[in-house]
Structures are given as C-alpha cells and as structure tokens.
Image (cartoon, rainbow, N blue to C red):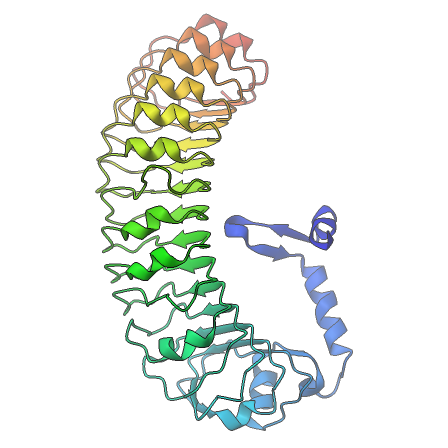
Length: 400
C-alpha cells in the first residue's frame, strides 16, 4: 500500500525490468533523515553511502552496531581488507564494494547481510567461512568470477537467496551449480560473452520466476529442465545462438514474457508454443531465419504484444491471429509480408499496427473494423497500392 501511495504522488515509479525509480526529492529527504542521526560523525549513522566516508569507517576501524548499509562504490584498486575491519559492523544488511579483496575468517562476520553487491570481485577468493545465511541478493555482475570460483561453495549456506546477478562476467563459461539455492527467483546471466552452457541444476529451481541470458552470444541451447519450470514468468534469450525455444506440452504455464530478439539461428517455433496460456509479450524482432509461425499461435488468448519486426524470411501470419482478442500491438515492420490476413479485422482491442517497410500491397477492408486502433504506420511501404475506403471509420486513430 505504501508503494502504491508513493507512486500516485509521483515520488516513485516502476520502470523497465521492474526497476524502482525514486524522485530526487524523496531521495534527498531520506538522506537528510539519516544525516540527522549524527551530523558530525557519519559512522554513527545507520547508512553510509558516500564512498570517502565509508572508506574512513573501514580503514579507521570506526564501525558501529548502528550501521546497516555501507556503500564503497569506487574502485578499491584490489586492496585487501581483513575480517577484523568488519567485526564492528555486526548489523550490516547491505554492502557494496568495487574491486575489494577480503581476507581472513568471516564465520562470525556479516551474519546479518541481506544484499551483497561485489563489483569486480576477484577470481581468487582469499577470505574463508562466509557465513551469509540470511543473504537474499547476491550481485557479482562485472566481475572476474568463473564457474570454478571458490566462493560458490562458501555461498551454499545462503539457502534464502532469491536474486543472483552474474551479468557481464566474461570469464564465466558455465553457470554455477544452483542446487543449494532452492529459493532462487531471479537469475541474471546477461552479457556473459563466453558462456556456452547452463548447469543442469537450473531445472531443479522450481520457483524460478525470471531467467535472463541476453547477449550470451555463444549460448546455443538451454537445459531441458528449463522447459519444466512451472513458475517461470520471464525468459529473455535475446542475441543468443539459440536454435529452438525450450517449450514442451504442459510446461511454463505462467510465462508472461518471451523475448528472443535477434536470435539469428532460430528457424522455427514449436507448436507447443500454444500451451503458454499466460503469455502476454512475444518478441521475435530480428529473427531473420524464422520462416513460419505455427497455426496454434491463435491459442495464446492473453497475448497483448507481438513483434515480428525484421523477420525477413517470414512471408505471412497464420489466419488464427484473429483469435488473439487481447492483442493491442502488432509489429510486422521490415518483413516480406505481401498481405494481411482477413482475420485481422477480429482484433477488436488492437491499438498499434506497425508495418513500415513491409511488402504489403494493400490494406484490406477489414482494417475499418479496428475500432480501438490509434496508430497505423505504413512508412516506406513502397509497393502499397491500395488503401481501403473505409479507413475513415477508424474513430480512435491518432497517427497515420
């Protein structure tokens, strides 16, 4: 309820990828509240977010039980910090570090940590006995970790982990064994340029909600177990070398977003795609080898957005598209389509039709039945020779 109230007041909003965005005034208010805890001595506040002050807390060993968040966002240049410097921070819940090396025994240190953001984490771990049982978010993005990183075994105690972000880890060739993380909900592997396969343990994470392997250029397939993830809601596989989509009958019934942009090896889609009963966004932008869509496409009753932009090998849409009653946006720009199916007139909720630089020769008369259409873009349709006379019936049209 609090989030909704702040959103109504335009103090926060939920942006792309569910990112929570905060108004500058709300941020400044929060920071001032924390400053009032002690204007003169930052180490006596609950949160220390200025790098210089946070570094002072560590290096001068001025940690206190009151500090819950410590942000060291500038590069530590590979300097080594021992467990002793963190012993005075027993209630630390959030820790951000950049190119810091930890050493010593951490068995009784950082036990309250919920969120660890360790940018440029070293490939060789010096610290031992990480006792982060309460860790919920582990962010090792832009780090040098590999599948053989010693820290994975230490992190096994984090049985409550919900988010694992290892994006931009260019030395990673295989994703880590996830067996210990049975409560994982979000796995981000985007831009791991040398990743060639996912560890099969991913299939055992029964409550995984979001899987992101975007820009993993060498990745050609996903483990069979991914197709059996019943709670999965988001699958991002853009700009990979995937040749097929791991969908099987009765699987991924809760999937809402399937994005396969610029998967240039993707040549076909399985008929089992029709079993994705909750799918609302299907994006095949730039899949140049995709030659056809299954007629079962019309079974996606909750589909709202369909993008076939730049699918240059695709020559048409199945007539069953008319059954997509919830479809609000259709993009067939830069395709070889020569005509639109007559059933398109049944898309009673369609609001946006993008067909720029397509090869469509005429707009069918059924276009006039699209009462909610607000945007019709046929820019640079050079062989478009006929526009239906009843286009004037598009009472909601704002852009033509």
